[in-house]
Amino acid sequence: MATYESRRYNTPVTDVTKIADGSVNNTEFETLDGVTSDIQTQLNARLPLAGGTMTGSVTSNDNVRARFGSSNDLQIYHDGSNSIINNSVGALIVNADTLQLKNSANNATLATFTQGGSSDLRFNGLSKLETTTTGVTVGGTMAAGALQGDGTNITDLNASNLSQGTVPAARLPGGLGKVLQMQVFTNQTQFSTTSNIPADGSTPTISEGIQVASRTFTPTASNSQLIHVINVFAGGNSGGAIKSFNIFRGNTNIGAFADITGDSGHFHCLMGQTLESSAATTSSITYTLRFGTNNNTVYWNRSSGTNGVTASNPSNSSLRWIIYEIGA
Image 1 (cartoon, rainbow, N blue to C red):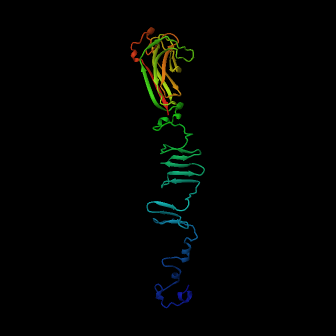
Image 2 (image 1 turned 180 degrees about the vertical axis):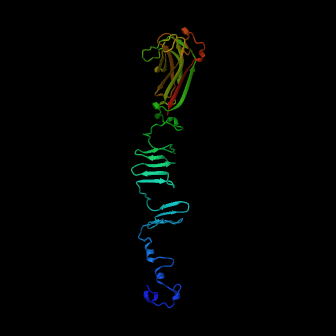
Image 3 (image 1 turned 90 degrees about the vertical axis):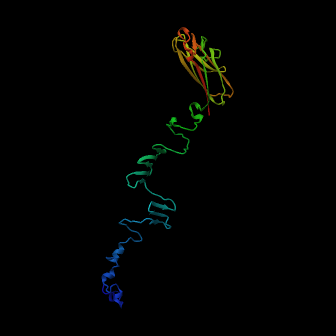
């Protein structure tokens, strides 16, 4: 390239001092101020508006936003304290067959989501909540303000861990519920008898044996269940003496108990328990307790002593009869 005036533009310049320092050469015409190589080479190295490949990092200062969408619907930036992804239209969709959330050091997994597999939430590296083909698995203790569901598949629930609340009567063994009332009867009256209650498998009747106790009980609800628990001391003058006692509701036998163990001169602590599945009334019920033997002489509320001698301290022997009313 020759001179500016005569070769390139063919236009005279009256005062060369108006151009830079008064002298212009080919190099100055082919470069820009501060650019030290061919200008076309410099322009070609820039990223075209139509897109291209970046070969270096891009750094943006705080609050400088990368914006996407015709209305800047998606913006990514750092505000000096937090990194922010702001999506204002539609859903923010992340596509990945396996998506992991990790800590800033990239050495601990916080959560993993797997296509066709589990979703796993962790605490300090340990899995705490994981989805499975049948539901979820909780690793540790689950605290919840409320739980809903029919509980069909809940297993291994330890009832001793229930600290409060009311369990419906239908959920307790035998359909029992809470104790509505409890009546305790004690008596130290002593008896001896040879009155017969046959040990032949038949149900004892109100005419067999002798009556040793009587009491009344009034249920609070007709659909309540009544549990009788009886504890008594009894003995016989023969090791083979059969001692039996029976509970009657009116004339109906509701519990029969017998003991054939022991030897002469020693008493046994005998216990019986029976359940009435329905009180069937809220009126007063009269119960009687009858005692008898199939053979020999038997003693109530005392030991037999040798050959039927009364025990030296019979006050230690007594009848205890407890009735529990169980209902909703």
